[in-house]
Image 1 (tube, rainbow, N blue to C red):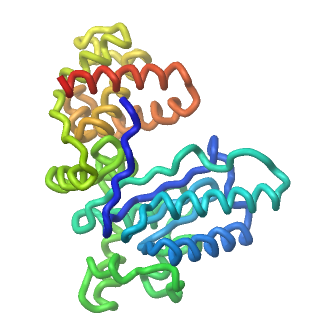
Image 2: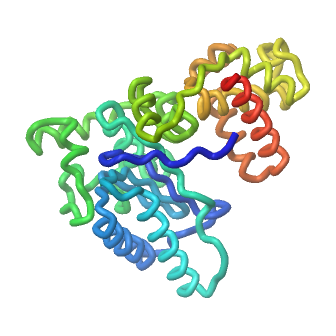
Length: 317
């Protein structure tokens, strides 16, 4: 299954994630954060992009970015190359700083922009760095609530506009929204998308986005077909995969099925939790564990690619 091209069209909004290679630190202190913001501001102006929300973590960043006529890749290549060169020189280091390509999930604006802003601003809370996002100074949350003046390179109007017509009412509704619990399934979608890891939106939005990219919408493959392929690769039976057994190889096979089904076949995590008779938290943990192990295990990565190739063959038959 070849890597699909980025989807680009004017007005598209993306959840962008840029991570340190092997989870290494990319920000060592205030000077690094400020330099990154400086070159980001320059890039936003040069390539005519809008930044709706951000959060800088020690080893990765999250951004909600909207493009115009220039593709997102122009900005990301610019800031990643400039920042890597500057940081390597500053700390007398060599080699790659960031983990492969940046990840960008195309997001349906009306349905998911508010959820994306909340997801980005709550990253430090989920990482147990703070209990309240207002206590984390390296995100756009404080600008959203009016605690600090929004920098010229950040646009909060569109994000707040989803919550109210006046600034005060929008900020109050936004704060209430921030206090609500995000369902585990939605968290997975915000992290990984719902179509080949590239898109988050309903069926019409996905079809429209693929049409913009002149891509064919593949036929839907059933969960049973995915399970059959995974079972064959893992040398187990489909019945064993749906059993109550907690054997390590079966747990990995279930997680691999769910991950590929979500990333490449438009399924939700809840579909696989129901199919395998598991609860959502445990299913989510299994998938997260497999994603982590994939970054370290060449053999597991090859196994995943083999499964994806077979699924592609089935869907295109």
